[in-house]
Every structure is written in structure tokens, then in C-alpha cells.
Image 1 (cartoon, one colour):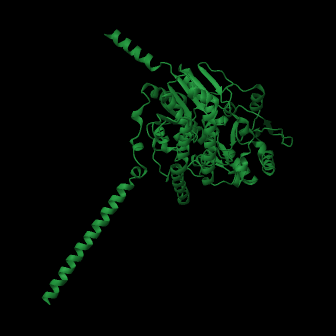
Image 2 (image 1 turned 120 degrees about the horizontal axis):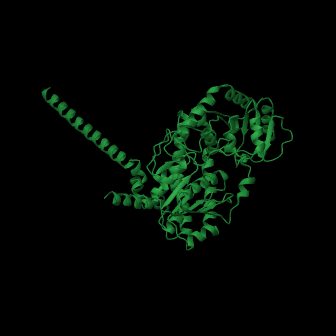
Image 3 (image 1 turned 180 degrees about the horizontal axis):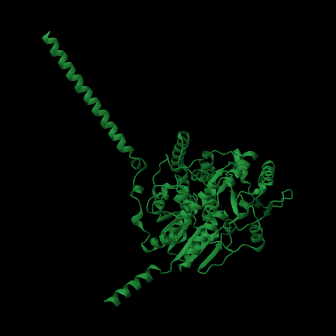
Length: 508
């Protein structure tokens, strides 16, 4: 009997770990997004799954069980040469509209790409499709054409921008829009802006965004049902967020947070960098604006202000700068590329100056390093508001930047030990998990595979109309009932009053 039980358990185990063929599509022309996909793909391959990874960038690292292919119409150089500082001054509402336009163009480019067309119309079979979601709903048609479950992964936090996919609740009073300059603790005016953003987002989605994606969907996958049904059938949506950093949100069971999925164990630094950091007795400040924003595009006046501030510091400055900078002071070291995660792990790093991107901020806090943000747009402002709320950083927004503000912020973080101490405490919290973020993501993907797409996780909210979801029909019904009751009561009171008046007149 024991032998039979052992054999049954063994067969069950084999079933659980059986290899699957997975198509993973990361269509965004941004290296930060690519790194998330790369980490996920490596985690799936380590479990024995066979992954076809379609992306905008060539894989430098060959991974067993992974077939990587660059999209034929990939144009990473377009992003590389773009000056994103030219976008400064856009309101959250204008960013919302312009991002949708860009996303629609990118989605059509991806759907028409020869590599995607080969996947849509070829003979290869898959068990699951993982798609990066960045306002790219029409890509849901790929999983439908291949008749397999759809898993979405998103590089930022769950928000009003994404909630409709898994029917997460929209509560604008404490769920900030990623395009706004708010964290969860909003004052009255911030809540007003966030509420308006939520309303505009909802109307824009209903009357423009989703209908346009529905047209795109049926242009390339004409047999598919409408986009609303495909979104509702999403098995799981994975987010690169963590409640420790971004705050807790009400999430449906098929909404999974795996913040720090891209964070890896530190590797050995190149000898010259190792020597530079080891010999920095007063510590090092690491400065980068990420992969999309370029230091070389900074206005000359701001660049000069940065150099003047750096020249006053006793710390060394390690700056990722894309060109030579001959006028730099002696304590500033310029490199065109730097192994960011490995640098942040060095004990002599005292401060990370960043644009406030979620990936870099997460990496820094995983290493226990406080952050000084110069946020420019999108979710960067929100990320740095979160850092300030947590006591691990200071935000000097690009539009409010001055030499004095930067100098004061750097000195405050370096001299006030609470920033470093709180960052180290947060690092412990981020690592205090049952499993790693990669293992968590892989578990949920395998859960979908094991359970036929996990339809039991789908919320019945998808079956409700918008007015039913917000109980507007119930509110209207109750309002009518109240109005009718008030009218009846008024009529009854009037009748009673009139009767008493008549009786009084008779007596008189």
C-alpha cells in the first residue's frame, strides 16, 4: 500500500513538473522592460520549460531551453536617440492621450511583424502565451489564435490604468494613477486630480482606446471575439511591484505582484571598477538616468549645475554618461555603461541618484541604498513620492530642479543616518518572502498550465455592465423608491392635515 502511494505521488510530481512550450512576447522598445522578460524566461527555462522569447533586443546570454528571436521590424535605435526631455511639461491628461496613441502604433507594428505573423500563422504549437502588457490589448489575439491561456506581465504597479483587465477595484482615493504625481497618501487636491484622471481614463477606454484595439485585433485575428471578452479571459496578470515599496492595493486572486523579479545576486565587478570603489574611502555616489533618458540630452545649464554640486562633495561620483565629459571635476568618473546591480551591491555606495524608474529604485532598495530622484514623467514622480513617504529618499523633480535643492538633498541624505538605516530595513523586508519573485511568477504560470487556464480565478465582475458594477442601477432604484415614499408620505400627511382642518371647521 505504501509503495502504491509513493508511486502515485511520484506520478503526480512528474505531472506537476512536466515541461511546457511557452511563447513569451516582450514588444516594448525599452531595455528595462526587456530585463524583466529575460529574468522570467530564465526562471521558466530553469524549470525545464521550452520558451520562445520574442523581443526587441538581441539576447547576449544564451540560455538552455530558450529560443530567442528579435522582431524583424525592431527599431531600438529610435528609443536610443530620442530626447525624452522634450516631453517635459505634459500634464497627466496629455500623457494619457499621447501614450495611447504611441501604444496603438506599437501594437500594430508588433502584430504586423513577420516574426509575430509566423507565430500566428505557422505550425508551431504552444501551451501558453505570456505577453508584456503596456497598453497592448490587441496582442491578446495571439493567445486566442493559438488556443492557449493568456498570461500578462506588466513592468509597473497595479493601478487604475490596468484594473479593468482582472476586474480589480478602482478606488481613486488611495490608488494613484501612474501618470499622476501622487502616492497613496493624497491631499484633497491630489484626490481631486486622481478622481478626474480615473473618470477620464474610464471614458477614454470605453469610447476610444478599447474600440481601437478591437479594430486592430480583428484586422489581424478576424475570428477572435471582442477585446472585452479576451481581456476578461486573461488567466493571470503579473506586476513588477511590491507592497513594501508601492503600498498595498486590493487585488483579485489572479493579480500577482513579483516586485524585484529582475534583481539578481551580485556578480564580480570588473577589476578597474572594483579597485575604484574599494579605494573610495569617503564613499561613492552612483548617478544614472536609466536606459531611455540620456545624460547627454540634459540642458547645458543643468549639466553645469550638476558638475558644480559634485565638485563640492568629498565623495566620488560614478556617472553613467554616454559621451566624454572633459570639463568634469576630479572626483567624477564617467562611464558609458555600468553594471548597475553589481555596483549598488558594493558597501561603499552611499547614495543612488536616479530618474526614479521603478526598476532602478527597486534595485537600490534591495541593496539597502537610499535614493535621490530627479523624476521627469510617467510613473517616476509617483515612485519618488513613495520613496519620500517611506523615508528612503528625496525627490527633486526635473521641473523644480535647482542647484541649491540638489546640493541640500544630497547633504541631507548623506548626513542624516535615518535614510541609510531605513533603506537597510526595507531591504530586509523586500527579501523576507516565502520564495523569490522569479519563483513566485513561475509558480503562477505553472498554476495556469496545471489548471487549464485557471478559469475559476476569473471575477464575475466581468459579466456586469459598467452601471451594474458601480451599482448605479441599484442606487437609481433606491433613489426612485425614496422619492416615491416621500411623495406618498407628503400626500398622506396633507390628507390627514386637511381632514383635521375640516373637522376643526365643523366644530367651530
